[in-house]
Amino acid sequence: MAADLIVHNGRVFSSGRPGALTDATATAVAVGGGRILAVGDEREAREWASPATTVFDAAGGLVMPGFNDAHMHLRHGAIGLDRLDLFGLTTLDAVQSAIAGYAAARPDQAWVTGRGWIYAAFPRGMPTREQLDAVVPDRPAYFECFDGHSGWANTRALEAAGITAETSDPPDGRIARDEAGRPTGALMERAAELVESLVPLPGDDRMRALTEEALRRAAALGITAVQDAWGRPDELRQLRSLSAENRLPIRFRLAFEMLPRLGRAGHAERLDKFEALRAQSPEGPRLRTGILKSFLDGVVEAHTAYLLEPYPGTDSRGDRRWEDDELRDAVAVAHARGWQVELHAIGDAAVRQALDAYEALGPGEAAARRHRVEHIETVHPTDLPRFAELGVVASMQPMHAIPEASQVDVWRGYLDPAVAATGWPLRSLSASGVVLAFGSDWPVVPIDPMLEINAAVRRRTPSGEPEEGYLPAEALSVADALNAATWGSAYAEHAEAERGYLAPGMFADLIVLDRDLLREDASAIMGTQVRLTVVDGEVVHSA
Image 1 (cartoon, one colour):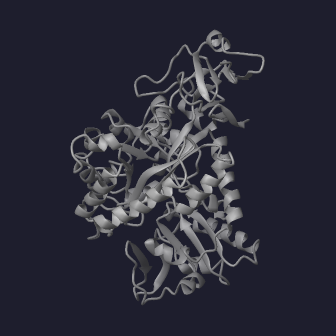
Image 2: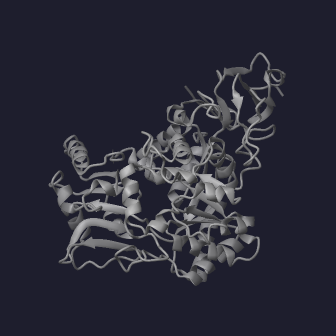
């Protein structure tokens, strides 16, 4: 077979497993028929050339496996492309000014919507309806927090949803109230859905266009595969349509939600529906499901992360979504039916609950299915070695640790110092033998993988703060961080036999960076650009 594409004059980061990450002598890769034909020096790659072969000069940059975003939310992020993005605004004045300008430019829009505000922008850590009324008094306005676990509604939006002092908190949700019991405008967890469900959504054609735009942006950033952590049946149908038309530029895996309070029979019935949906169309290398996601708790900033000890100055340990025996039953039902499970767990109590549920499956069972814990912002020291003992994948989002220095201060200020000191233990988990899988959690933070690598390696914001790094003892090497964002993420979705590293016979999913991050100082990470993205041997992005 002749090569369709040869990438040469670079440095090949083959990845594959921690401790054996790169071949210092490889400078070229030959690709043909959607697979990698050769990884080696110039001569070895040129042996596959023909007059029809495209040759790409890496110009000394890093040639590596494509990034695999192990945890993101495509539908949510795509919808956000049509709305106001507040990410990066750190003061109330800046937030209000952005909303006022956005609303003024859209006088005929029925709702003013967006997302991305951070808790640190508000004097008491949570927004109020009066603050939003001040810039949007004439129509409903609703803005989702950057982490997706809190919402901010103005008075018109609360009225539209019928939320008053008499409205009860929904299951797994809380309406923030003043001393008189009146809603303040902040809505935590599932309570946000009371307003969110009223916000107009894009029509089918617009949603399709936004989805394609989101996938193109991902490809331009070097992402060749994504794993959606909270999908819906209609999202799967749309992706199938795109795939059938060869308009799915990167690989996609979709998780369905596993809900509490259903009982064994209810979980089995729900799986019946998911399996029937899967059977409607054959799954392939570009589009798959087979995984269930559930929330065990919320987030620290909203006091909804589930902790082993109460939040300082309170008697609350946060929100516990599942009873222990119910979670064990649900995981056991999914496991027996061949489904992988990923559990959102941010507080140390939620992390322990997830590990307990996996351990209850029996020796070796969690490792066989590669069940996962997502986020792991805090973990009790006695639970840390259990990840490796059980073979549980640690799916983490390094950028969460430092979206902004001020945001870290809020996170840290809500926790006991001993608990805060266990934050995002990347190196500790990696050193214990755990497989790390990196993702962005987009649209919680931007989808750019370089933000993840920078946060994992430097433990700083993109602008370099704090100078000493946040809990720098938990920083990873560049090679280990790249490995977690490629091979580790492929392993987390049972795909490492065909993707996640560069070797003959593997899928030709690779990228070319404009510099060699293994030789550059770590400060160069944030300036790195993706010059080429290849999926199945097809160029899907070229700068």
